[in-house]
Each structure stands twice: as structure tokens, then as C-alpha cells.
Image (tube, rainbow over all chains, first blue to last red; front, side):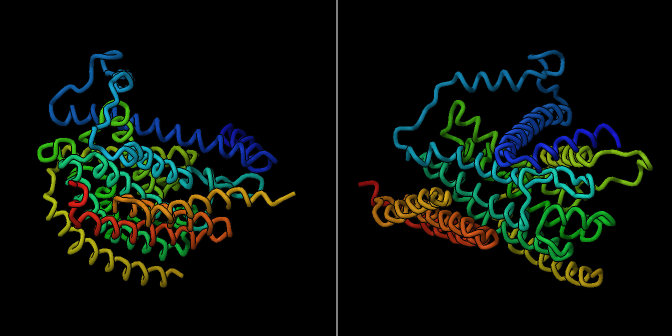
Length: 350
Length: 85
């Protein structure tokens, strides 16, 4: 029994067997949200640095030493000190509410993300803020709330650019939620469960990226569209729409709206890791060396984040009509095909 | 001692009643749509209080995620003439 287990044993005593455990769980939830927030900060920094590398630039290199480590803090201070402008014609409640709804949807998603699954004193414990029987359905439902944030921002701004971006976003989302839902259902069929912990446990022999590669491709593309990253960032196409739905925002409100997107991207990396890349199931290459599951999860999440950044550097942006074509004419048939495949394989395994 | 569940029930009910009145009363059709969405989410909260998590999540998925977005899509395609005086 290593140090890791002793620490986890103490944590289990504090969180699971204590009469105050609901309150402590709330504190844990705050900590996990903070950790994912830090993850989003890391992603912003990595994105600026690696995009710089890929485009033969240097990237941030002034604030905080050679690698610009304090650049984000400088940016945050700048955003806090800027004037907070609300346009005179804006719909005030929708305008103020939009960043709040965007971040809330991200925070709610974090609640069911498991980081590890520990066997301690004859019991299994999932290291998660909350464990639900239907956590994957919950993730899908709550991630859909982010559409409202963009719509509120776009409509509330009373700006043509912002409204166009909101229109595009709703049209895009109607098409892309369906293949995403179908590929999640295929995974649930194969794992015989809607619980993310059980889905990851079902991947202990074979990861779902190998068992249903088509589903992975569909899910990955739909998720890229869901978090609105290149090549699906028509909602904030700089060349056409200034800054899309965030055109009229300034100061920290813009900062929150911008940050909510990265928060969603990090949560999306967690979803890909847990649903298709085996979560805390390690690769056999490490042999007998014991590596705690949480490190596997974080390593895979960082790899997925790097792939997001790499795609952003490599691909141009689609036109909005092409995006909708891809969603309805390609992804949905492929997702249905994958559902058939995973049902057959799932029944054979059962 | 009264059941503590009455407190979240009362809060959710008041929000639901208020927002469903606002669906009918508000001048702008977009506000009506958003109040409608809030009412539907309140219904999901009531299902959670009844310890029916699955139906609560499906309520959010179907009514908020699909029908709510469809209502907004319809609102988006209508004109905004009433507001320009």
C-alpha cells in the first residue's frame, strides 16, 4: 500500500463516512471547479504558446520570464480594470445573464466527472463530486444549456453581428446535438450502463475508441462543434462577424464569456477521455509500475486538449451552410450506422 | 418539525409560478420564451425532489434542450416589428 492509497484512505474517511459529508462534498465541489478552472487557464496558455510555435511566431514572452508564464494574470488584471459597458439599446437582463449561464452550465457538468475509481477496504469509491446512475445523460442535458447563453448574448446585445452569430449557433446546435446524443447512446448500449464510472470500467479490456472508431469520430466532430472551436467557430468568425456573439461585451464580462468557452473545452476533453479513451485504465506499456488512475486521466485530457489546439492551427473554418450539411447529411447517418454496429457487438459480448 | 423538503419545494414553486405568469404577461416574445424555459427547468427541479432523477434529466434534455431551443428558433425567424415602434 503506497502513500497514494493512504492519502485516499484518509479522503474516503473524510468524505464518505463523516456525518458532515454533504457539506464537505460541497467544498470538494468548489475545489474541483477550481481545478478545472486552472485547467482552462493552462489550456489558454498552451494554446497561445503552441499556436505561436505552429505559426512560426514566439507567442507570449514578455510578462513573467522567457516563457510568458504570467501573461494570463496580466490579461486578467487588464480585463478587471477595463470599463464595463452595457450598450444603451441592449436588453439588460439577457446581456448580463449570458456569461453567468455559460459558466453555470460548465460548472454543472463538472459535478459528475469522475477522476479515479479506488478499491479501499473492500469497497469501490469513485473520486467524483457526485455519482449518479445516469451521469452521462446528465452531462448531455446540461451541456445543452450553453446554447441559451449564446442566444441570450446575441439577442441581448442588439447588434447585427451578435444576432447573426446567435442565429448560426442555434441552427448549428440543432443539427449537432443529435449525432452527439446518438453516439453517447451507442456507448451506453455497449457498456450496458448510463453511469460514466461503469462506462469507464467497461473499457478495462478494450477502449471504446477501438471497439467503435466510427462513433469516436462522430462524437469528436460533434463535440468540436458543441464547444465552438475551429473548424466550427462560425459563431465568432472574426473576419465576418467582428467577434460574433461577444461583439458588444467588454471588460470582465467579455473575459467570463471567453473563459466559459475554454471551460467547456476542458470539460469536453474530459468527456472524450472518459467515454472513448478508457479514462483511468492505463496502457500496458508501463508493465508492473503502478500509476494512479488520476494521472492517466489528466495525461489523456492534456493530449486531447493538444489535439484541439493542433486542429485549430491546421484547419480553416467551414461556411455555415457546409457546417449544417455535414451535421445532417454525414454525421447523423454515420452515428446511426455506429449505433447498429455497437448494438450488434454489445449483444455479442453480453 | 416540518419536513425540510418544503423549503426547496416552495422556492421552486414560486419561481415556476412567477415565470409562468411572465410567459403570458411579458411584452417581448423572447422574454416569454426564456421564462418558458425557466418554468420547464423548475419542473425538472420538482422531479428531483420527488427522487426521480431520470425523468428530471429527460425533462431538461427534451423540454429545455430541444423544445426550448425550437421555440427560440421560431422566435428568431419572426420579425421584430413591434419593437421599432
